[in-house]
Length: 426
Image (cartoon, rainbow, N blue to C red; front, side, top):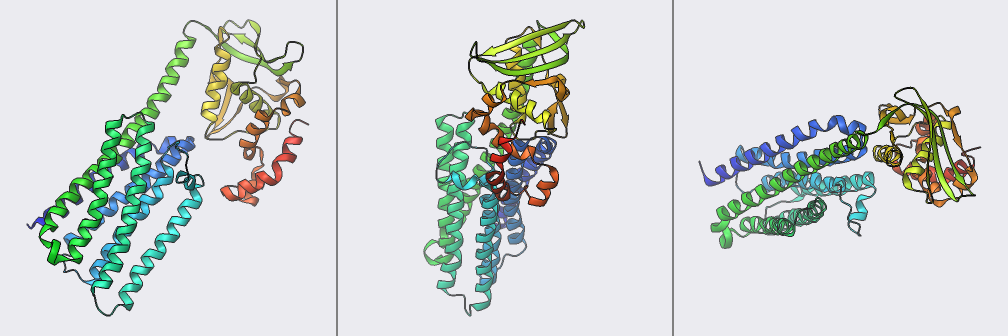
């Protein structure tokens, strides 16, 4: 077995094992991704990462069974496979759940547009490699420089972008500076290999003797990369699942010494001009079937009360709410009540859930909204309804207007929201 064959077998084993590991993670989160948009986006990015790592696996298999000289057709096929790897890595960038906001990350806000643009660019690159195979009469130095140089530029750009995103992804998970420094160094070294390896083939008389060392250097760097990616997704999903479990445990602890609400009879939301207080009043039966009425008052229009108002209006308009933030909204609404009352409310009692579409269980005739115009005059109320506006659009209009497309949805909101909001409680 030659050194190069050993290197290729090592590359095959490392990338395939990590890809399978991440694929198992992807499968384990598919159920949650159907219920939660945040999981869905992360899982979509993870799938692109898996395809990118499998591209290295395919490269290894291709070279194991096709160890030819440095011919033009060989290098073109090699560069096309490398471009596929860069394609999937570039696609995955938009789906890392980082909060960092700057010029670079602004390209990821509209994920569908990012995906389309990346596909267009790499289609052009792959077409260029294919055309080169047809128009080139001889495999000279200029051909080598053009093909290998272009691919190296894309590879280095891709690694720099991935390193930047992964750096902030680790940082936002709470990793300290030593880990972040390790990430910088790892991606820097891997980028260097994208210069050294092509040069050793383009000028074999100068660097040919160092080629085995460069391969060993590359396999070390690629191992670091796939390890960092696998570790990130492991920690990310663990922290997300642990956070959800902590919220549930906190909710249970808050209820441990309190009576439970058994049935909600009436809900009233309003504003008292006399006391200058917003209020939420609930009539309910306790676990002993005794009737109570309690009022939660606050001088500020807090976000949880905004959600109570939103769900109340949605119920009166016979609409169900679905959005990536609904899970957090439900928790805040219930917590807002439970912090001030000894009678504890549960999400299961308050909300009806139909495959991720939520609404109040209580009938709309038992929901009262006082001072409607006063609420509507508040900017925070208007912004919240704009965020959830698509939920109020009838399904037939969503289908006709193709509002599953973000560009169409943004235009529809711009054209129709004001008239909707004006008549929302009429």
